[in-house]
Length: 460
Ligand SMILES: [Zn+2]
Ligand SMILES: [Zn+2]
Figure (cartoon, rainbow, N blue to C red):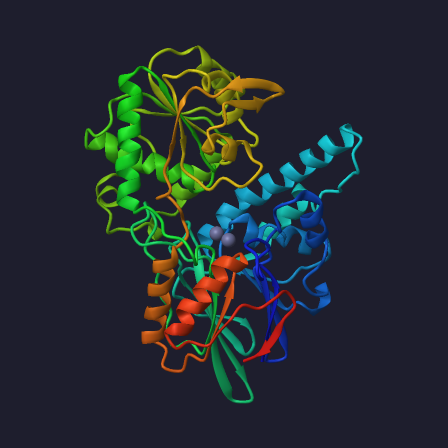
């Protein structure tokens, strides 16, 4: 039996690992490489393994760095099963269609500018076909991926439907349990359940994104959100929140619902100005079975994402009309790093007003407008104009969907307590500094840890 690491090896994007067992080849995740355009496009064009060798695909969750290249496999002729949880399938329906559209738009944009053209990796019909061949299996139900490899999803507590994957691989009467952590979430995140550590592992593939960082607590994040809204509303300003349409927006709406119910924020209107966020919210509403029923709001409220103060604006005219409204309000719009989407219009119009607050609730990569806001640059370049940044800027780190250094450590501790035969941990999905620090920490616990490079292969 063999594992080969292809993507998210010494980096965070392009999650993809290949398991060869019982004479079959299984692909774990097939995510998009993201980052510098040309570099990542080159990587995205490489098939992880020849299509006719793939017997099955198992997908941990819907994030684009895990699922974003599945339609590329379809385009090249893959027609076998893609196993995932029901919520992952439904989120993928929204996200892969969006990804196909973004790629087509990017290609058009580059072509218009006369730059070197980049062909989209796939189109909408490949994304649609991907959803059709997905096989949805709920958590904790065992299924045969291929003969000789039995699998089960358990909750990774990262986003709706996210899973850690348990693979029991049997060859010549010997069974080995391979665990793929997927992305590991955090205890106490809104809506979704806490990560569930697997048991009986022989070998583990584990993410390490924040192997060298600590986050603000989840409770701290909610309190911080409330105080920013109270203060901005008191001054008559707007709170502008760039947020990823998938996951982060629903978490913020959920927390605002709880805060409004507790009287912790004033009754000002909250606009969710994003068609993708509206579609994603519908997917959330389809899967109440995977919500965390230990949370008060989940237990007591029927409509988690709909309450008096919240308004969803889908049409462009409704979005434009927000500019003319008066009085304090909250506007949540994509994109999460303020690189595109409707948030740009709200920033172009509102960033120069010192009464307003720009509230950052997600990671902001280098060279994005969101990062320049975090750095509190005096002017922002939006739609070709210089906009002075006079609004207050607030940053909340506590909404991260990834376990931090300490939470990763306690996840592996719990796996280990339940896995007397644990022999090997491979770290994936992390930049080298994060991985190296986590490897040292886990090594000190007596674990055998490796940070494989892309195309490294190991027997297990
Ligand atoms: Zn993820
Ligand atoms: Zn990821």
